[in-house]
Length: 117
Image 1 (tube, rainbow, N blue to C red):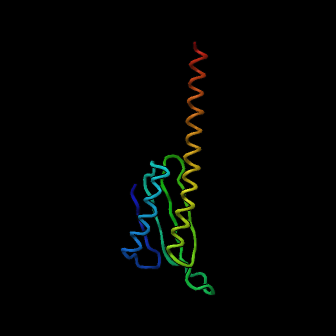
Image 2: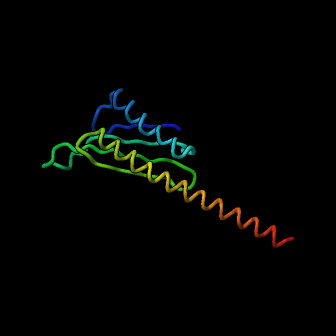
């Protein structure tokens, strides 16, 4: 899987890059057909009363529909963790739907073959 990391309003340090890449690359355990992950991490300045709010967004390109998540937190690392957790659940759902579709397609093929006999 290719991981593309972009900073928004912050400087991307090696520590941030390594952390994000480690967390996002770990999603391969749940679904091994991920083509590319585009990650945007940064600061959102619209919350003048709350101070800096960090944002993490990730778009996973997978066969079928792409999976997207965006989370805001007080720290960048918490935002990345929440995005990863959310994407883990979404990938599990996507994998389940894909398996059900494959089973359904196989049943149709089997029924057609039986009907032709």
